[in-house]
Length: 325
Image 1 (cartoon, rainbow, N blue to C red):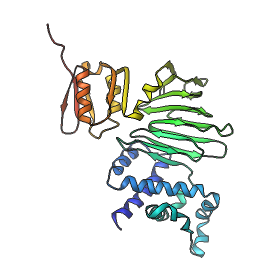
Image 2: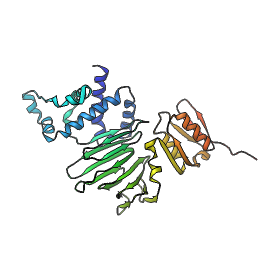
Image 3: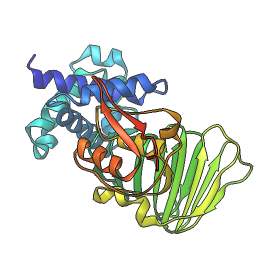
Image 4: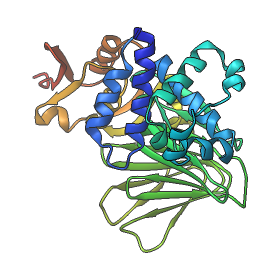
């Protein structure tokens, strides 16, 4: 088997594995490692495109693929793949990978997984007309049903522009929180056990396990919630600041340095680490341009009293002592 064919087979395997309920952090970390291999991202995109196309073909195709095994044993199972001609050779090869995969398990599952690697962003156009802008190192799955549209944010950040459809509410699950909308534009961020929802247009309702009633979030407001906690907080924010990541900028207003480090670690493989109480207690207000990691660390060190020390596997940030008079 050629390396490209092997990547297609592996991509089909990952599509199955990550849609299972038991998929956890170890699976996502392994998936990120695999996705960084040359050719892996293209193979995964191709397999995902074919999987989605099959679902768009309707129940007839899915019924044929998931028919009784004994019927398949009596006569060879054949699929007319001529409709793949418009998708190109790579997609056609991906279709073969899907057939080689345990399709009885994969294809009947209606969820479609979308992911970005570190430093990558992408735009997803859904069949209902909704649009999702996916930030770096993010993973979410989508299911379009007859009476509802469901998204699960496994980890990461995304900007949603939801097509208006009062008969099919758009529901987003993120940890122990659920965001329900009909048609609006808003940002959802789930990182390190914390959920935030920022609304640009329209109105959303956010339900959490610890709250008795859903909380409404209006344009120019951000809801924040710690997963497992009982409460939420809602405050006024600059929506433009919260969405600056779409133009390659990170805007902070009095945020702890730990939050900035966590954000930067979503973009680069070499992690930043904080050492010492003086560094952990620092807060930052300003704008960071997302480009080269070393350049970003230099700019951060010039704006805050911290020093950066490269090690074999990370970059350590420590607080600098205050100058004596």
